[in-house]
Length: 88
Image (cartoon, rainbow, N blue to C red):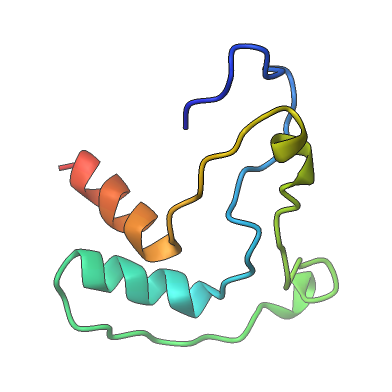
């Protein structure tokens, strides 16, 4: 990601697309990028973390946009594909 030169570098804000996606979407994107069939085994969330686990996240993009970032974000699928290709 190329941020403008005046973008603050000392923040811990996560950059995302601003669109909530599921872990299932992520897993399917990984399998697709690897050209493998999506064989996914589901397991229950361990009881000891169920009340602490963050089940839903969605990045708020207003802060990034407010400092001048105007580019569109790529989809989860494209980002996973790009990342895995970079790791080869």
